Image (cartoon, rainbow, N blue to C red):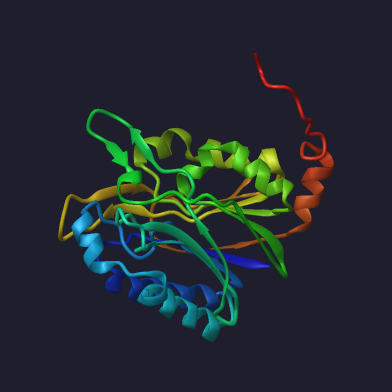
Length: 277
């Protein structure tokens, strides 16, 4: 089947972001894509928590989710909304970073809340505390759809290989890694991590990414790495989108999953062992 990645450069204005995403979604479908994927936080990138509270919604009220579900139905495509920032009912007011898989009827087939929070100090001038604004998820998700079993993850999850092993052991053939990766860590680790997750599991890895400098009317801007990737189950990079936003189409031959796993049957060879002492 034919897939597509939408490499986005969203601002802190969800309404403006939605208009551009919808146009790119129509473009991707027009190029024959049947499975279309957007990056992490497709609705809004902002470091200003007050601004987020003013523009984000609960899932049932979110206009981006509603509009993209409608567009998927009109176009008759499968859509991975990489993630949306959403309000929750949590007493501490933290948001959810939630990925959605939408079917061609516009229905939500699966949801996944990002498990691993990006709480790091990349350098003396670049620090992130995702957990101060977003609450972590606790449930791994494999969505079984007609063309594949899809293991859903988000961004920083990629540094935790046990999650991907568990998804593959549960039947995943495609692993999705929508991201908004830091340029510093992206240049150092992005390609290596994604290729490793593909090789270890014998899965396709589809990683739609945010790119460039993200405009903000309310706080400092943020930069992301770009380079949306599609990696084959053998670890070959079959798509690297570089740093330009846009629509990037690719082909998926699911027979490659069985072929790679037959050549290196690491999932079948996994053994239980006692912990180190």
